[in-house]
Image (cartoon, rainbow, N blue to C red; front, side, top):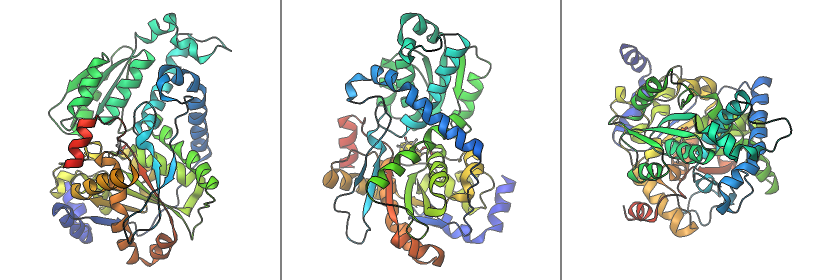
Length: 425
Ligand SMILES: *Cc1c(COP(=O)(O)O)cnc(C)c1O
């Protein structure tokens, strides 16, 4: 951590932000020089392949989760937020909290990686002949083969929960490594599905490291690496096309002067990074990407404020990773995401647990939304972002004129008792 102290010494203005985080006050880092995102043709092809893969699997997913009144299409609504409190702009909600199967944004990246793995097994084990329906993978012979394979993953709860749920439905075995933050009901639900749950008494980053070691070299085991995976990242990126179509239907066309201001809750960075990557691929600089974190787990803010060239532990600046937003309780951001999109992030906002809770309640009372605290963080970030933008000439007018979209990333599957506990504080 010698290097970290050098970084901190070289960025005195970051020190004031870190002091705010330690005091649990909202803090905003504004990128002084947003980089144009270089999206190569290879990247565009990869997004297209991910979209095609989701489409191929639609009939199979709708058979696996038939009670959800859907056609296997992983998509969420874009809706107007009713009666935002005074002083806020008109807000749109991108409702991934209600995504099918997982009730969280993990239905995009996490499920995409599972589909990639199932396709590889199907190819290597010749489970499908050319022209076969994808549903053939649900027949006993194919299922017997899939059941010889496993996925392993480490998580603060939501990724593990989502991967376990869908992997078991697909016929794969699942080994889920849970960090100390993970909620009991998620573990119970997974055990009931015959997934193996491995509990770790440590934070998320250490849990990933342990799970990576435990899964390496295993026969027929695929480790889903939340810190490094391209398949996760590009699964998330597909969401950009979906919202582009929805904005168009609403008659909203983002431009550089009237940009899409999008609030993306950030844990390790894969979900918001992938979505922002997709959005910048579609809209270029007509997007202002705002990542949102809890004050006590603000790993992206800390890394960006210290130059954005490498991940830095939040512990090195005196934060403790304790937050009610279990989906975002990550002490060190993904180096892969930092490299891929870090420079193109326009701002990072950190919000307190109290602010997230206020918004869980408002969203429930006024809009009937069931959000978990991680997912309400984006709502909490609007006021601090607007205030900070006012002090930055390059942002003030654009943010003022912008189309504000808050990505609500999870919550629909919270059991009633859990949700009531959150609502009551
Ligand atoms: C996973 C998750 C996020 C953030 O995703 P990362 O890839 O960890 O950055 C945000 N909100 C919810 C509810 C999540 O489950």
